[in-house]
Amino acid sequence: MPTDDDGAELLTGAQIGGLLEAAVQHAGGRLVAWELDHVDAQPHRSTTATYAAKVVWPHGERHELLGVSARAQGPTDADARAEIFADGDREVAVWLYPNDPELPGLTRAAYAESMAAILSDYRVVERRLTAPELTLDMMTYRPRRRAVVRDRVAGGATFYTKVLRESAVGPVARRHRLLQEAGVPAPPVLARTPDHLLVMGALPGAALAQALFQPGRPCTAEQLIGVLDAMPTSVAGLERRPPWTDALEHYSAMIAAALPQASSTLDWIGKEVRAGLSGLPQGTEPTHGDFHEGQVHVAGGKVVGILDIDTIGPGRRADDLACLIAHMSTISGMNASQAAGVHALLRAWVPVFDERVDPIELRLRAAAVIVSLATGPYRVQAPTWVSETLAMIDAAGALVRQVA
Image (cartoon, rainbow, N blue to C red; front, top):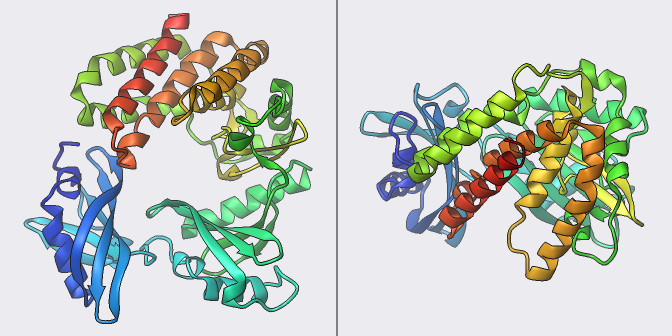
């Protein structure tokens, strides 16, 4: 992704190898091999990347994850919690997982011994746990943003630990409490730690993302709308999260920097979306903010829970339904039978969504969400990221053409 002010060229090029070697040597190891693992680029602002590395330490060889951040305006106060290295005139922050400079709780959430102590000390479990009784699985890690770890107790319950920035933990905890008190099936917060961890109970059922591929209808469109409409009106009084359409130019710029051949199509999509949504108010309905098949739990053909409610706030119902359509329209890795099943669900659900919100708005907003998702294959360094990205842009264009 060619640029220089935000450090993207440095962090995604071969020249980063020397800096990684210096950082590992400074930590007391020797870098044997490395490869780019994940990229989060904010054009003309900053770039954060992680690298899967093989390192020889005095105690033996280990696979490690290294993180590096570069900023157009130079290191921040948070960067100072990592190690600062210079490459020419540029200074970058480097850390070794789990010592993320903005997620201090990750250093405890990543290890069974410390998580067993947390679950015991906060009485999340009824007896004192030992490390061998706990299995940890990293579900999500967005460097310097958030992480989610699954904590499975041998012969017992499963919990999820959300690792957050200091500024986020309070608002997220309040949102969970708000929905719980209103009877909306969001996970209960069972513990909150000083290093910004939230331990939550598991939802019943299975994620819609899994149920999509099981026999029978996982739920109805009416139930999906219903769980959103069940959110209390007080949600509309929370801080507003900008809709995905507000970031359309930002994500288009990210893609165009990597794939200049897509620029004209992205420009056309942006023009049509802006024109089609012009004049619409921001909306005051309680909304989820990031509603998709990974956030919904179902059982017995019904919706039984919603996840990741960090983003709830005022907005337009079309944003939530468009987000679901966009995600389901771009599921990768399906075989022909699975794809046919997902498309059949969309054909059944979208007409119901069209009765709840304006059909034109729904499609234009879904197209904007797809553009945001099209940054994903590059960000996670998928081997086929070019073809996957172009296919997503085509899918966004197809939705726009339905209403243009």
